[in-house]
Image (cartoon, rainbow, N blue to C red; front, side, top):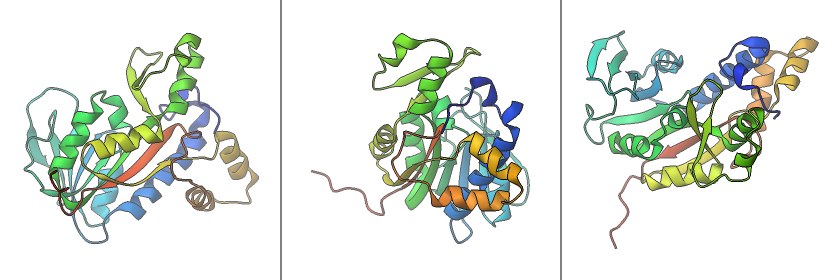
Length: 252
């Protein structure tokens, strides 16, 4: 997939049609991933995503954590019959093994540079057999952002942890598929799969949708059918699914 300019990554600009496609892909991925029976979910997307509402419409109870990265006191209020909004800087308000699934969309584990601490907290609150869905910035994106800013030396000096300075002064953490697997297994979770979020380029999406011969739904099905596991050579984001083991590993 061709690199996307940094100023396009907020979902606006000339790539608006591509982001419509992107969000449709995310919605379908989530639909396929959600538990088949009503469950208790925690969403860590920081109030930036539409995914809690989708999960609630599917019949799940959702705790949506707002401003997850800010050191503020937790507060809780009802948002609907099936969703609650919690303002907290960690998951300390939840007991161990209390939720069925955790969603960390909107690149949350890249925005929070201490991803290891966050995913350990996710693993703690998951019930045995519970699952986590997470999305991170890819190495492809990180290298594109560096090249866009003419940080050519940094491209040859990338270490184990790749922290990327953005034009707006913020910093995010980018991952390879191997690093995502290490992040997940380091927290005691089992990796189900790691995939690029999308492999189709914005130009291809525009061309297909502009031809009038194919629908957005067809394009989403094509995208999901073509996603390879563990390929981090394409796509600006990686998405992964993990599961908490039913039994803890035996102590040696």
